[in-house]
Length: 222
Image 1 (cartoon, rainbow, N blue to C red):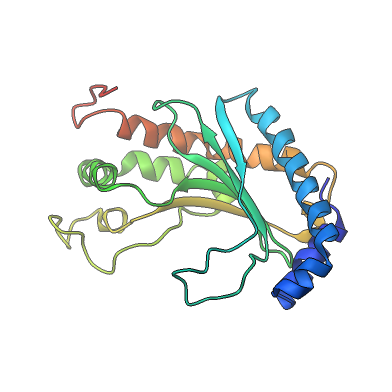
Image 2 (cartoon, rainbow, N blue to C red):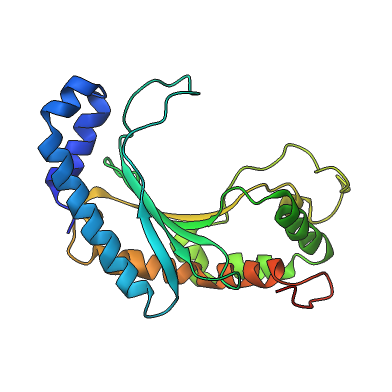
């Protein structure tokens, strides 16, 4: 579904990230974009058999350089996400198609708002056994290794820096990603591999949804 041609185009774009080169290879870009769009729709159909997807989105390859020190006009990859439907389905499935073994599939919680982050931390402060159980499950470890994301260097305000669950309390992001080699991305079953990876993240999403849709007494806030 994703051809070697597309990965080669993205690799060359990384080496020639300028408008004249891109315009000269516009047809290569459009071919690559169509392939990724086909992949997105196939995986969306797969996911809707086991979940409820509100919509899928393929990010633009054009970078917003207005407020960035990096003035390169294009991303060297194509990525997107699947938004789950309803407040009772938290977490988004995301992916990047990137050459040289840097394609990733997974998802999580990239930037929880202040209220959500505090609720998560309060849950972890009270009991970390559930998040540990979810992230130490053999299937989770097989696909993702461990939970990833940016963490504070010290305890967040209002929390004890010597708390036994401080590892979890310091986290600001909660992410799980699986890397794919180029030869895996170009296989005919890559859409199925993406789907399997997304399904493997579901127990983590289900646990975080339970946290974010209840108060500290476990009563639903929906």
